[in-house]
Image (cartoon, rainbow, N blue to C red; front, side, top):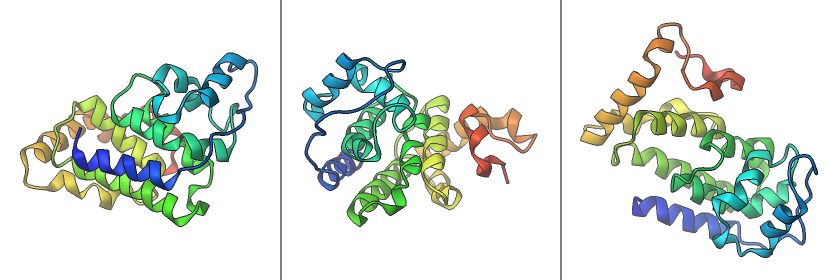
Length: 195
């Protein structure tokens, strides 16, 4: 992983440092007591994608509170950045908006913004597969209100940027002809219309 992304993740851990929640509440149809206990009994940086996956998918809808999300946020981001097979980045990165992240303390907002900026910057430095790149673009679009100008790293004169821009276009080519984007997670985003 790009060292700038690793540093951005470390910044998230520092900004969101807080005591472990005493308990995480959840709908018994969506999670078990054992799963919820595991979330608070395992040190944050040791939580696996298996342990955190159900929470990441259901956070704020049927499991946990905004405070819980802020506790788990650095680990959720880290697992997503490492490509762990657990809820799609599009799901994970929609959670802060549900929690009103623009009202979080300034250092938490800044650390979240910084990670997004480093992820976008990585598009000019690291070649992604078309589905992975499309997933990240959509995920960051669900987090940020001003994504289009932030995609400028895809226009840089680097081999990775050129490959990634082509991959993103190829992934969405058919839908772009209809003024849409291909990722199904855009369907509930009002800003998903292609310009």
